[in-house]
Length: 464
Ligand code: SF4
Image (cartoon, rainbow, N blue to C red; front, side, top):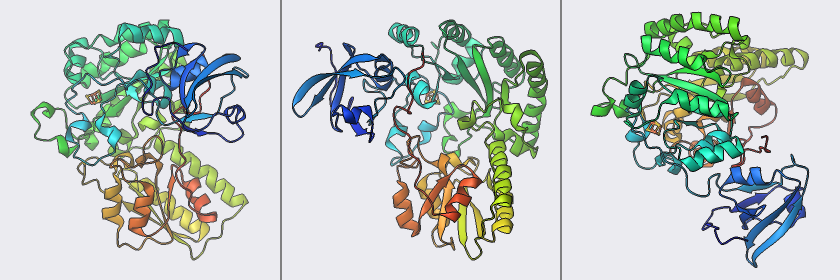
């Protein structure tokens, strides 16, 4: 064991050992700390997965009886079965930008603790899909990226013109993004990129240039998403936010759709894939239909709100076919679904159909976001207290179903740190969490399930 082991507190803390796993067989117990693997310090979950990828690996742990080293023998792809409290044990890489539209600026006290940490950590992008700006990479980080090939990464670009990107990020020393993406690609690390658009700032000719520059990096750049800025009323009045916080109006959304369409056609012709995708919000704001499933090429940016509506509709078509084969008779049942105001019309249509097909009464309740301001209309940014305020005292039926996207990555907390069980107690009924209508039908057939929890390791085995 080397003396360069920086673990303290919960760093490397084994939170759980999966029953029946190799770790259980080896006698590893929750509460132990992972210190080293293959003779190298383990800095985080990424190191843990990388170093444990060999067939024979010495693993050093620290427990109540002091440090010990065991030899792990396993198939390279086999997961040892440890779960950790955190993914990054040697401090999260912090953001060095000052974006005018940064949500964290307007946050009051009492929100989810992790929300006050302005992370911009490529490791969390690799593990959990966080978007990062690549403005804080050190030489050591690049060396690690090269060694461990941490990809794909999700990257916030916003604009490829260096001066405009620096202005948007509020960071005069942000490195140029195109060479960075090329360098990553040369290392074998592919990227999914997003352009968060503020009307009048990085749209129009700037958007054209960003699209051309990123598309020229295909296949290094695997996808380009165009997403409207979250125009939170909480940021209004802050001088730095001036000009950046304009709402996505229907005519503006139609303009964006018109602008990107020729590119999408060209990329499909040239590359056999759309490559450039619009956030659902543009289609919904414009009153246009969302594209067909094939347009999304596997939904690489689903968690970023790209194609969620199409997936919801696809799932419902499949659920209806299943209902035709195996009817669900639920007369007399009454449940309520709650969501943000953006998804409300589509969800209401599906719920009405589901009510007719099953006999159940399925109500849908749109929850306005007074916390961030009503312009923030997506379900994923609704704090627990907003659900409570809107739904308390209403006739909700036997149970409530909320969008899974309103919880954190782990499935444990709402944005304001409220836990699902606290909301259940406040509203006096069970709550299920779902992405899709088929899950709602499952809840009606059986009972609402607690949110599926993700682990810090994301269950990934190493694939170099
Ligand atoms: S990159 Fe911008 S939006 Fe993201 S945390 Fe940093 S300042 Fe906030």
